[in-house]
Length: 376
Image (cartoon, rainbow, N blue to C red; front, top):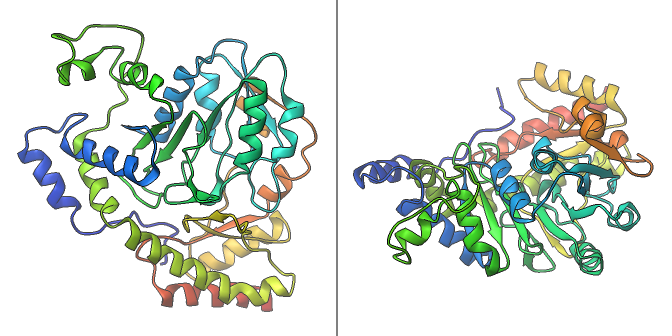
């Protein structure tokens, strides 16, 4: 059976976790947490990176720092994971969904401005499949309207827009290190902070509302409860697992890119014949081979293809059900404008297996079976 996903593993994870145990420092903000944070800061150029227990919690921290309150509105795509909306809904905001672009599956930047009202507080673009949204346009809109930008870059590490890393455009960027991501710590994430003025407050929110980070730096003689907050710190054991992969980030990315290119090349005849569509990568975007997907004619064809591949011992999956059509989406949000592409395109998209140790032979077998399906 070719699984849809296999969590990345380099071989040093266990060694580093053992080292963390021997350090007798396995709680949050231990040595490996600091190593991971510093690596991300060097890689992205962000002012500050704070490792978190998930991308969900990173986005919740961003919502706290953006001072999202009851009655505010946040503009985002409906085609995204629930966490993008949850972070703001938890603060009492309404999610305002706008349509996506059918080429990149990202938020349609031309529809954002007309969705702005006097209640709009933030924009949350989602970089689907590690392909950057039109950040120049989005940042211009945010600047003219005084809005905060929170980038959902859950799938975006090692990817860039016009040479600038994803997650570093808005005031806040959020990474995921879930087991399905390019680099994993099982469950985990990171908050990227562009402006140093937010750092101290972010540390307080992340440390249960205390100034413990300042205490450990020797800036205060004891730490105290300063504000509301929660515990967003991952165990240093998780960070140790992650650091083994960050050390080999280039190798992992190149391996995934090789498989992505093989998919693209081997399925090109089907795309040229108009039987499927393949991912579109704008020339100014550098993606990270987070996923390879195809688009079928419709949901019925996709279901038949999933079943066909499963019979051939290949696990493939579809992705998000649009949030605006879900019970909570109807309760906590609204769709602005026409749903021309969000539902239609989401029902056609099929993700093929993609992970670090996927082999060229396995990709060849998968693509042969996809071709066999369409040859019937």
